Image (tube, rainbow, N blue to C red; front, side, top):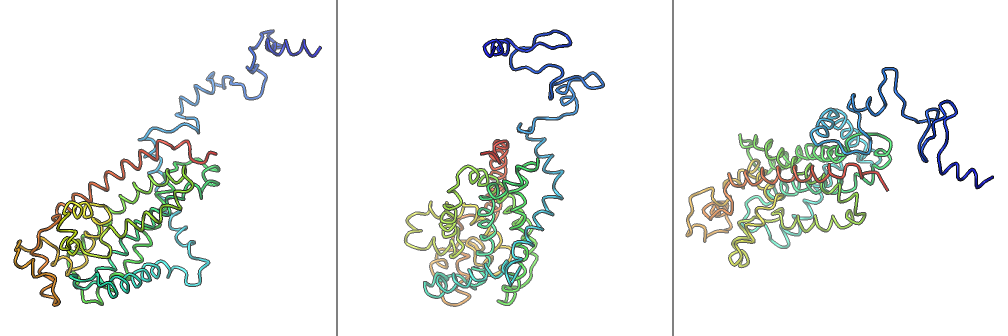
Length: 363
C-alpha cells in the first residue's frame, strides 16, 4: 500500500472536482497559497506587475532606490537626532562628552607635539591650528567608525522592516555632523579667545563642511558594506584611521614638512599628502577660520626664495614669511580637489553599497 501511495505521489495528485492531474510539486486550485485570479480576473503576478510591486528580496533600480531614500529623508533626520540624544543618556556628563572628547584629544596632542616635540615650529598660533585640525578630522574619523558597524548592529531592525538600507549609514553620518556642529561652538570660542577676528571668510565654512559631509556619506556607505561582510574590519579600522590622521596635516603644517630634508628630497610625497581628502578639508577649514593660517599659507604672497629661506623664525612677522614660499596646491586647486574627492566617494560608495542591497541582514 505504501508503495502504491508513493507511486501516486510521484505521478501527482488528481483534482476531485475536475479530475485534472496536477504535476508533482504543484498546487491544485483548492490548496492554500495557489495563485488564482482575483475579482477582476487578474492573477496575483499580474496584479503585482500592474501596481509596481516587486519581490522583497529584489534590488530596486538605482533611481527608484534614490527616490525611496528621499521619501524617508524626514525619518532619517529624526532617527539620527533621536540616536544622538540617546547616545550619552547613561553618562553623567551627558552631551558634554560630544565636546569634551575632542578637547581632551587636543590637550594631549598639544602637550606632546606642540610642547615636547616642538612640532609647532613655523606655525603661528599652533593651538588654534591644532584645534581646527583635530575637530575636522574627528568628524570623518567618527563617521568611518560608526558606519563600519551600523549593519551588524542594526540586524533586528533590518530583518523586521523593509526600507532602503542606505538610510542607516546616512543617518549615522548625520549624527556625527550634528555632533560636529555642537563642537564647532567650542572651537569658535577657542579661536576667538586666541585673538582670531571674525571675517567674511567664515562663510566658506559652509561649502567646506558640505564637501566633507558628502565625502563622509560616500565613504560611510563603502565601509558599511565592507563591515557587514568582514567581522574583523571594525577592529582593524581604528589603526588605519590613526595612521591616516598622522598623514593628514592634523598635527603639522605642510609648509613645515616641505622644508625638512625629507620634504626637499621627495616633493612628490608632499604633494600626495596634501591631496589626501582629510588634509584638503582641514586646509579649507583653516583657510576659512584662521587669519594667521590664511596669511602664512605658501602662495599667499608673491614667491620670493630669499624671504622663504628666512622662514621659520621666532617672531610673528617671521612666521608670515612662509607665504613667500611655493605652494604645494593653490587655493583654487585645493577647492577643486576637495570637490573631486567628494563626488568620487559619493558615487563609488553609493553604487558599491546599493549593489549588495539584498544581502544585508542575511546569514
